[in-house]
Amino acid sequence: MIHLLKRHPIPVTAFFRHSLVLTYAFPPEILAPLLPSGLVLDTFHGHAFLAIALVETAHLRPSFLPAAMGRSFFLSGYRIFTRLGGAASSRRGLRILRSDTDHTWMVRAGNLLTHYNYRLCRVAREDAIPYLGICLGLQVLFGSSEEAPGCAGLGVLEGSVVKLKDGKDPLTGAALKIPHIGWNVAEPTERRGLLTPAGQHFYFVHSFVVAPRDRAIVAATTEYGERFVSAIAYDNVFACQFHPEKSQRAGLALLERFLAS
Image (cartoon, rainbow, N blue to C red):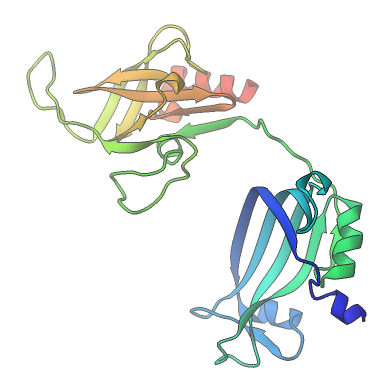
């Protein structure tokens, strides 16, 4: 009877507020001792794999109950990629090592109705950790880039990364070189983030620039053949196209302000 109970006898419904799966490659000899007889490692190019899933659920409940009766909590799981019966078998699966949750209700119900081996844990949530993005750390926040067609970015911000346009030096009339390498002024907007009110020189090395859809997050712009976004700021995020670590006193002062934030 208990064996039947542990086979998910009741359909459940839940909404995932956040989810993240991290997969790590290991030498097979490290993970093989963790498998029971009948299971073998599902390997690729000589590596075995362990996945760690982190999920924040909302309103998890039996499917026949309304959302208001659901529970919200954190779950984590540790799983090994396996095959049933032998290396040539097409039946793939996951070997459950353990699961964690921050709610005693899930420990009791989960261990009664599944083989997930839930344990009670404490979860520290930090929703406002400061983020400083430098160069690629700015560009990766957007969904796509002309530098790497078909490769998705994080998509945290709406917009894209585009190639810096050709232009001419306003003083000499000579064609500007791409990539843009050297000192240039980052002119702050009203939302300047970690920047000082007055424009400062920073060191740039790049061929692509960000084009955010929401202009309200623009913290600074710079002129080089065209006026491009050289920094953005919102909430706990500041990201810049220039390199503070290469920008002497102005850059060191910016880094100090970030560390103090």
